[in-house]
Length: 101
Image 1 (spheres, rainbow, N blue to C red):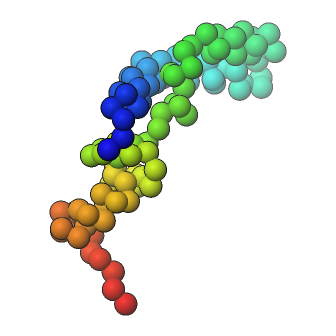
Image 2 (cartoon, rainbow, N blue to C red):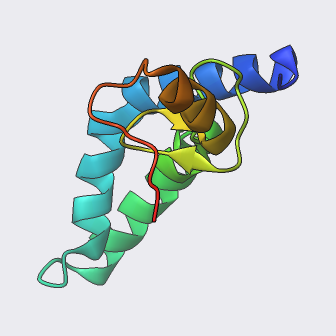
């Protein structure tokens, strides 16, 4: 089980990303638009710098839904490799079978 503070911190980041998503995308589009004047692009980049760092989508960490473990995360299932194996062996994940050869 991951530290509760780490899980809560990541949840707070997710909320910030959702809150600033539209503004961030708008400014990013302006900053990357080559047809605009260089000063306009610079102003957009400066405004992007004013947005909180945790509002950047790259700062959100994928974590297991059950344990909060950040490593070995399977996006398709939303859980880590250890939980995937346990739940798969118990037959709780539909369509997942243990391979044998």
